[in-house]
Length: 387
Ligand code: GLA
Image (cartoon, rainbow, N blue to C red; front, side):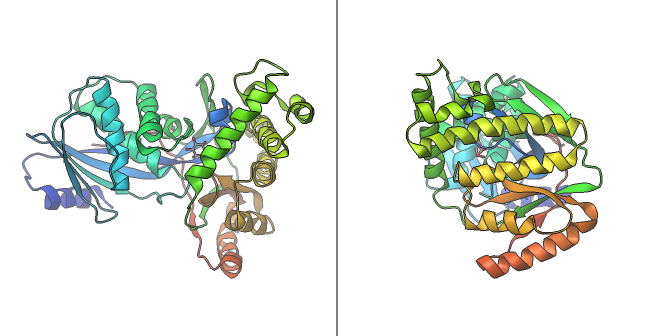
């Protein structure tokens, strides 16, 4: 939607053309490699997209917060009178959770009108949630002169998601949408939060995101179950080394897992996390050497490990990945995000991209009865004011 149109929608909703709303944007993200490692203190390699969430926001002389979105018909109004509690209108919990983090830090919030518009698909593993949290955080920070830096806003948004929304995610998504940099991916150490922006130069290839369009049902509970299994692994491995998280071990330690972890499921989970950290580290190294072929191979092994050892893929994601790999020009393809549905990310030769999308669409429809969506994203900047 163009800005002029968006602003017209704002006036149509809230009136008063004399005071212009301010426009903010926060991207979605796609993770190239390093999956289910963030909450284990490991490495991730996401990048921000040119798709995301737009927010028009304006202060009003009252104690009311008014929320509306162009994406669906579900407005809400609420009075400012202390901390908020989780509401039944699910999407409003994201901004309310963020507002709570400001209130908890004694930032005085007064009446506001919000109009959101998102062009990243919801619940598809592209961080639509982190995107709406961060766009709200960046806007409130500026409007109320709160003085938080990007890392503060990232942590506040993650807290909103963990404590208010109730999804126990790691820090990758909020970090990627906060710190995104055009044409770069972020190699982030989720333990120390040190990071490096690495240029994504793919020669004659491009990134293609494919949405399974499978409804994600049990994602949150399965996600929390995986976190629990990793905690269990850490506890057992303390008999071997006094570790705080699985990422303190490296690929050379994998043969020892059998000795310390008797439960084969917990052992597989630990193996995934440790091997995935190894793959993410190598992937960044080979990308810097412009070895896209090896980068693609590592993406493929990442998916295999997420399927066999971490068990977070499922029929739809596996169909896209294993059918995709049979097509010409595909260097690598894997699930991205939490899994159980959502999207895959593939590196495909530009010359084969159109055929990839049409052939994969046909076979995916045949096998699953679902119609996939394709995106050829650009890598964009992080959350910011637009005008
Ligand atoms: C979700 C979470 C992230 C991360 C990924 C898996 O996107 O929000 O914190 O754990 O899953 O890598």
